[in-house]
Image 1: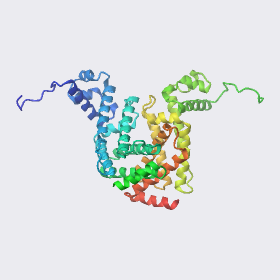
Image 2 (image 1 turned 180 degrees about the vertical axis):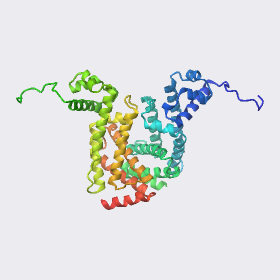
Image 3 (image 1 turned 120 degrees about the horizontal axis):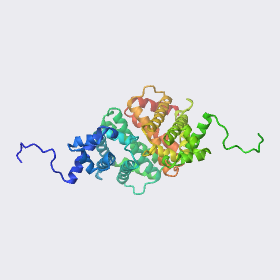
Image 4 (image 1 turned 90 degrees about the vertical axis):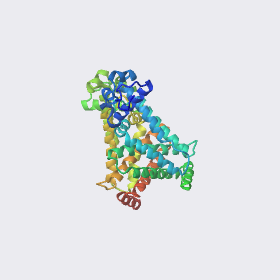
Amino acid sequence: MSPSAPTPAYRRLSVEERRSQLLAAALSLFAHRAPEEVSLDDVAEAAGVSRPLVYRYFPGGKQQLYEAALRSAAEELEQCFDEPREGALIERLGRALDRYLAFVDEHDAGFSALLQGGSVVETSRTTSIVDGVRRAAAEHILSHLDVSEPGLRLRMTVKLWITSCEAASLLWLDEGKQPPVDELRDWLVDQFIAVLSVTGARDPQTAALVKALGGDD
Amino acid sequence: MSPSAPTPAYRRLSVEERRSQLLAAALSLFAHRAPEEVSLDDVAEAAGVSRPLVYRYFPGGKQQLYEAALRSAAEELEQCFDEPREGALIERLGRALDRYLAFVDEHDAGFSALLQGGSVVETSRTTSIVDGVRRAAAEHILSHLDVSEPGLRLRMTVKLWITSCEAASLLWLDEGKQPPVDELRDWLVDQFIAVLSVTGARDPQTAALVKALGGDD
């Protein structure tokens, strides 16, 4: 093909490539609008394909496409938590948060719609995909803390902090992405240390961690 | 009426009394089962009335009944936050939390179903009732803190802590109501002071509050 030949609109893609292309188009639409405001026609148009083709890949229609897009976003989000087990724990946490907040920044409206609930496409399946991401985040943190059998109080503390990070990112989007993202990251890290210390005052397992964290810095 | 006469099953109630009776029956069912597991027949049976009577009061069926029950629970919940403006702030916060946690204890399964989302009866209307309670909680706290124009960082801190209390009560229910409720209350109060202090390190308005809280104790 000569360099000047136009790219054909319907280049033949493999099944996997086509599926990925449709998911990417859906994700970029769901990222900027609430799911109820995205139609299959919009997805077809964004991907430059026909509506029947979208249905061929997602015969369950918008619900199926939304769930597949959500699953793909969840995988991307879980990759944010992949952090080498090297260096100070606080810095690892800061780097994971940087990646998480970049994800929130990129997927803003879709991220809000998903977490705020009340959406017509929200089902127990979508809820369980989101819960899976929360569980993965908690497991990553506990594994970096080198805790294999976290007690009730430590488990609750880690989960509460993850909820706080989620809520903080929603508020951050609501507030026009204020305060600046670097400040938000440091603030969340400091909150983690602070709530761990509060728990440490009533839980020996957490107290030992707080001590180790201080020495690690 | 002599003391030994049995209470008639269909005593004539006023419209308001009947409505309250049906709502109370619905609330007690929604408190122990997820909304999708409660039928209008269950509500009729619990209230000792016929199903058509339930429909006469709630022609929109279960969705309408659920929303009305939710509204009534939201009012009850907002009353938990009514605390006289007397004594140390930390103690006022502790008393409001005691009432809130008693509410969570009483409405357990219904409380979880509502806040965890993914329920078939969840709509933007039910979400906005719940958001109204969150807003009311934030306003109460800021008014007790004597702040009329909270800045971004203080507002976010208060909202994040409210989210933490919600998440903590869900985890507490999941964990079979462990740790003991008094410990949970003190833990949440301590978390509030800790996250306020973290925010105070980067926000003068919050720093002034933290100082005042310390002196108030």
